[in-house]
Length: 265
Image (cartoon, rainbow, N blue to C red; front, side, top):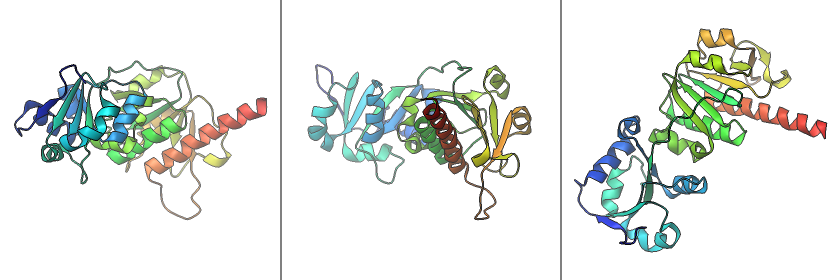
């Protein structure tokens, strides 16, 4: 909080409110505005715990008395907004009572030897956010979203990621050819071909390739993969949701690493 205290907003036509509505309700707005809207205390805490300092911290007027002791000084600027006005910004059924406005992080360079998850034209925001959570949980700190994939910092992806964004190296809008720089084996996921995952000897570090929800991995990527694996489905379903498949595959990699490390002790 600044020395002069928080700024109060009570007009629906305030420029900041207009900007927040755009950021909250349009998936790709952050690319045009250059800022990201984090709604809710969970996402704000996740960002703060990773050392992120927002440009603006926004609070519902009714919450400030309780929130001030925890959040004062958390941002360059603090803004209080009438409860109903702040709720009008939200795209959620149950609007949050606080949020952060962050500048869009600069795009990092591709680390050629880092454990990586590649998203090939994944378009469902919930799937993408869930995969980011799995990547962070299982030690795959670099996620590369190829052109045609959902916007990584879109509101729905942020909510589904539950804070995982702030522990990951995220590259989006990447051309497939840029993956040639990776100095690690690529593993293609498939529903109908390749080794059974539970029996495969998985390389590490590696790059897991996860394809479009309906079309799967592009033939160009599949042809260049060093390995192709499929997940056993004794229940007989035709295929798994890509986010569920990603969690299984990334857990298999993490488990293989832990087992190798334990055996070497």
